[in-house]
Image 1 (cartoon, rainbow, N blue to C red):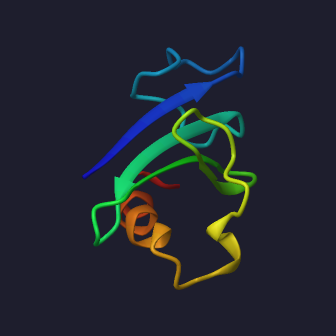
Image 2 (cartoon, rainbow, N blue to C red):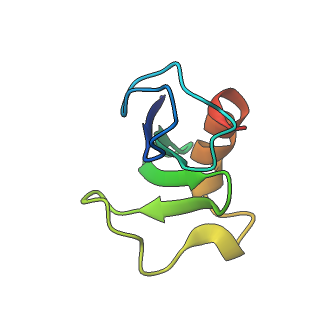
Length: 88
């Protein structure tokens, strides 16, 4: 399971926030993704072209301990397929 939503805050971007198609090259594009790891745990993230992924809690706030420093963290099982399909 994975899903993608795009929000763009650039005034010149032709997209409507939250809908695709969008300007993939827009530096203001913010992708919100959700996916599950092999054990069925749901992971959420915000991905921007400039900063990469930021993993989020259910309420949309950043996780206190990010899996970014651990390449073997289960969150990557959810993120990697999503990135292959939706990432830039």
